Amino acid sequence: MHTVFINDHPLRFINAFDKNEIELAKGHPVYSENDLDIADLIVLLEKRDDPAEVFYLSENSDASWKIFISQCTLIEAAGGLVKNDNDEYLIIFRMKKWDLPKGKIDYDESPEQAAVREVEEECGINQLTIERTLQLTFHTYKQKGKRMLKKNHWYLMHSTSTDIPVPQEEEGIEEALWLDEGAIRKKVMGNTYGSIAELLNQHFGWT
Image (tube, rainbow, N blue to C red; front, side, top):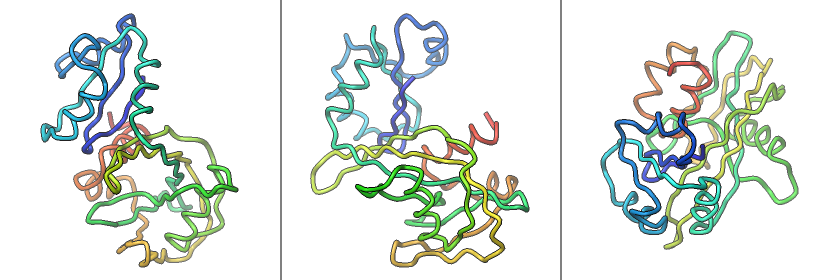
């Protein structure tokens, strides 16, 4: 199942022949390819304030997802959910939201290299090792009148550094903190992006 966050709310592409995916959509708004084409659905969701997740039903969800991507300019980024030896995680505060360190992938680097570099640059934390790949996240935004689709590669990392995080102010980062799981649930989840909340929920098994 492909998911993208539009206006910070999830749009999930589901297959009409997959009973599990159809079950997930129960109780939520569902549009089918017979109701709206994808271009019109994007415009509808960009104007929508209702926070409920929306499902798009088609006979081939992979094909519908490719059509969705074709409506956007794709940008790729990478970042990390970083854990230290005290079972704390690295969280940043930027643009009035709690977030995870991430940034655009340079043309000459892999997503893994970009993720490590961005954590080092945005938080001043090194001694990083990648433990495993986390889920991809996608979200849209407007830039100079264009509809952008950001594909974020995420990695669970470990750092043995004992340094205090230093926020990269030139990137608009106001705070960089080590927080334990309980503090993340209490402090971060009520004021973060939908895609980040979903990533954290899945990692910690909260839902």
